[in-house]
Length: 119
Length: 285
Image 1 (cartoon, chains in turn blue, yellow):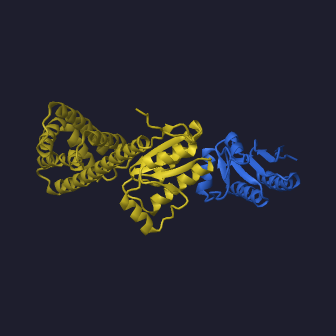
Image 2 (spheres, chains in turn blue, purple):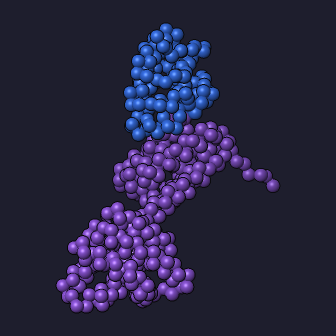
């Protein structure tokens, strides 16, 4: 079955979504990521959605949920690389992802997750 | 009916030259613009229109100008109306183009049908009905052209009035001028987000000095833009809030608490510099 790879870098987890998200894939990612955060005792999660150029309300909510779940598991979560069209869609859907950190690209997201760089 | 209408068409075609003169005289008398060029153009339009109307009446009668036989005449009227919109004529002047043909036509009908009062009355009422319809059609066409002009101008205004400028490395400014409606918000949002990607800016300053009024809708549009920019990883500062606007925002109960707001663009710029770790220092000596 198709899965989105979760890479471990030190105590960070890196998720890059390179394919079109469909509902099943999003559910699997949610499962995998929460499991991995607990198993690897990750302190931070970086989700790169720069290749995602189409979202519907379900995927938007899944992104929101995944980020919120990672946060509950005490992993700092940064969502990076959102495309303008995706941002506009999410705002129009009322999903402003309050409480989720965002960054323009992976580089900036990484520097936000590095210990001591963020208050 | 068929018989009489065809007679009107014949009268128009037979007396074309005199009708044209009479028409032009009454047109000039009504409109009162005596410019050699304009008069030449008017003469051309009028003679073309006379022929087309004559033919159309002969082919399809006077009752239904939506008929296919009237298509050429309608097309010409639409063209003339569009032209007049561009030249700045008023709607009355445009409609008079058609209405002023009534007088010369009526007098020709009277001469032609001198001995037959019944036929004359019928012809005149048919003529009246026809030209009223044509006149209304002209006004409608005029209005449509006018609306097109307005729409085009709106579009141009929209594109002109949303520049995103880079103030500093990582700092963008978006000086908004004019009222924010949903269509404009969309354009503003799109150009801001695209520019954020292009310049990889981390702070955007939205300056609303040029926004005349802020109501709940405008505030909502502003907040949407801010939220979208935040999703892309850029913080927004709203600046240029005038005293009256601050009062309205609070009276309306709009919540701007999650957004950094500053009174002037200079203040906002200072915050942006601090955030990006830059500073401007005055040269000593």
